[in-house]
Length: 107
Image 1 (cartoon, helix red, strand yellow):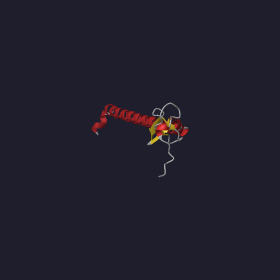
Image 2: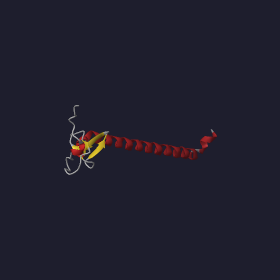
Image 3: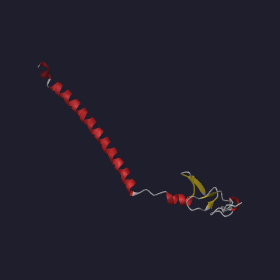
Image 4: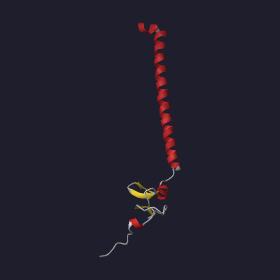
């Protein structure tokens, strides 16, 4: 019978904490780590160092897109406010015309 070259986890130690037993192998760097040093991320066991290198910092493009969204929302809100004010003023103007030129009703 052929034995597999995979080492027994009980004999392996954590890459960071040498006195602790390793519980899993990092999918990124292939080192073994204890429970405190490894997490599950996107269905993969990964160490903190590899997790930090995988997470991309916010790019200028995403900041620009967020800023564009804020500008669009502000512009839309301003357009609604201006439209509302326009219709209120037009209604008041029509009421003023009716009361000022009451003689038009007799026509």
